[in-house]
Image (cartoon, rainbow, N blue to C red; front, side, top):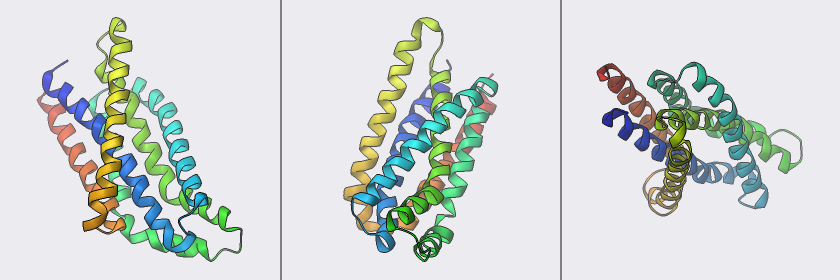
Length: 200
């Protein structure tokens, strides 16, 4: 694999893990004013994020088999990034509308989590099969290449959790933190297209 492409794939793997957990941390703060900060909120968030990632892994694998190059990765980054960039326009509005629905607060919380976080989670999850495919040069390296991708993504999630929880919350509002994550994804998608053009 071209070194530039390899480093981009590894960086993007780390970045996707960082953003998904940062998104989840700030997601709890977005839901808090309307649905509290108890077990129901965290249960809804964790379930929706894990469900979104699972769906993303499944359909991302099929997408990667048909569009295995960097262009497919860029499309996913632009899509997830755009949704997250515009999050301040609809985040609290949706929470407020759902909180007005006359149903159990647990169902309200689950519905809000689904509406706000499921699709971006699916799109970010879809990136992982691309990274796996781009990082594996042959059948003899499937175990090592796949293990490295999952390890790096998990490490990114750890760093994203810590930085979001202990640093970013001090300096940026929850809505604009999500928007910032969107900008980062969009910029990374642009870099992806530039690298794709430079490759032979």
